[in-house]
Image 1 (cartoon, rainbow, N blue to C red):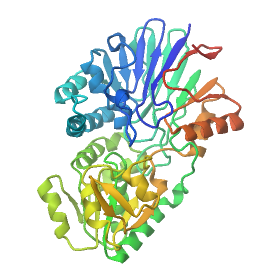
Image 2 (cartoon, rainbow, N blue to C red; image 1 turned 60 degrees about the vertical axis):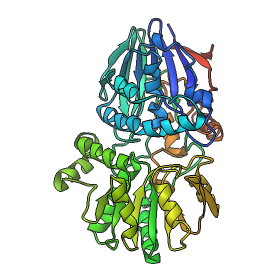
Image 3 (cartoon, rainbow, N blue to C red; image 1 turned 180 degrees about the vertical axis):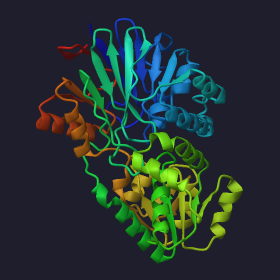
Amino acid sequence: MALRLSFYGGAGKVTGSNFLIEGKQGRVLVDCGVEQGAHVCEECVYGPFPYDVKTIDALVITHAHLDHVGRIPKLVKDGFRGKIYMTPPTKDLAELILHDSIGILSEEADVRGISPLYVAEDVDKTFSLVETLDYHIEKEVAPGLSVYLRNTGHILGSASVRITDEEGVSVALTGDIGNSPSPLLPNWEPVTDADALVMESVYGDRLHPLLSGRTAALKDALHRALKRGGTVLIPAFSLERTQLMLYEISNFFSDGSLPKVPVFLDSPLAIKVTSVYEKWGSSYFKPETEDEMRREGSIFEFPFLKMTSSRTESSKIEETPNPKIIIAGAGMSHGGRIGGWEARYLPDPKTTLLIVGYQAPGSPGRRIQEGARKVRVNGEEIAANATVEVLGGWSAHADRDELLKFAEATLPKTKAIFVAIGEPSAERFLAQRIYDYLGVRTVVPELGQTWEITKDSVKMV
């Protein structure tokens, strides 16, 4: 008996994860994400799926980021009627993320002169098919195929997926692996029972700064920024990064290590996501953070924080004298309210831009990070005279050494490791590193490839 594994997204690219696993009878998809970045393949986003969606029995989701869930409503619109499995926090977060994307998709469709990828009705229909599945429960989701989820410590509710057929042949897919240890989430759990592994490699060729020093580095960067007397801009992803920033800034104010200045969370989506973190934190955070929540009630809110949901509230932020801190999306400065604040404040040398997350090639954030003195934001070219501080230790992705540890933990069971979900250079670097250090077979798969996995072999079909 064998499993077939096909790569229909996430091969040679960071975004657009989409993998098909086929057994003797059943067919299961893992993730159905949308490609993101400056050079997106239009056909890959708007075109038909490379398989018959009506024959798919189930879809299993690793986590709620758009590059892992962003094409699910299209899958449903195109005829998928199976069950969709995800953890309870992922369900709440994915529902927010997908509804939030509808407006952006509509605008993109207008520019391209095509129909939107999906509409609100498709999102609603999607969640009528969702069945939540928690960690550490074996569940048959398709004829002859069962799944088992483990925590990856990437964002709230994130999971690796191990799929097993009736004869015990198994393949595991990591989704994204967390940058453990996290202030909020448990460490990633090892996968020890898979014949083959598909793993991410976003930071497969890079090291983060020491995690033990990242809180101090953030505090020092904020000290320098506030001393300049200007506005501090933090383009932060609404999901996970924003909550980490709120948590740390709250602690800085509480212990007196930062002067108390106004902080604005200027993102309707991030405000809603923070509520989901509050809802599930007592069950899905690491034990010491759960204890902190029980003692304090909220670990994200503090007296100097104002959450500005409406445009009217947002427009009044400018009236607040400097120094002040504005946290807003999008995390790569490629849209959202941060663009307006960058247009307003980046020309001012007193401004500080804190980059606390991955910046995709071609994004405005990446150009600023690389030293561009002019950048186009929201269609307007602006001078970038602000001080730029890059704090890489806050990534939600494991770096090359942590990824190597994850790979090592799969041995001796795993016979082959597929290195995917990364830029091609990162995939190749990590694959070579795993092979050199661990001696296990590594594969850098190509888009559209199908591989056959048995208890004794892994080969391309």
